[in-house]
Amino acid sequence: MSYTKEPIVIENPSEKLLETIKKLREQKISKLEKLRNMKPEEFSRRVILA
Image 1 (cartoon, rainbow, N blue to C red):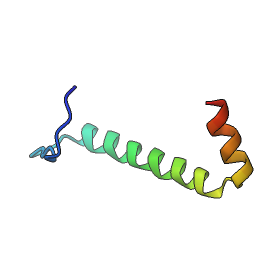
Image 2 (cartoon, rainbow, N blue to C red):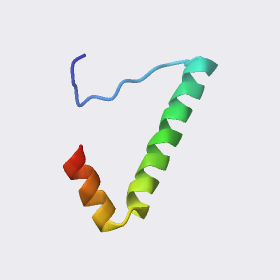
Image 3 (cartoon, rainbow, N blue to C red):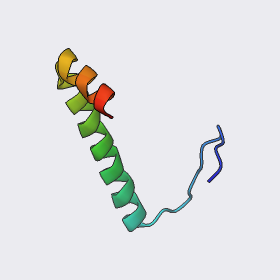
């Protein structure tokens, strides 16, 4: 997979693709929320263990 700064535009996406993107966004938001709610000592412990 190559990296580009240009966004990929999909015209007429299927319902399945839209559902998949929605699930990925929800997962990302929940993970970010989990990180935000973490206490500083828990966060540093996880970073060190990872």
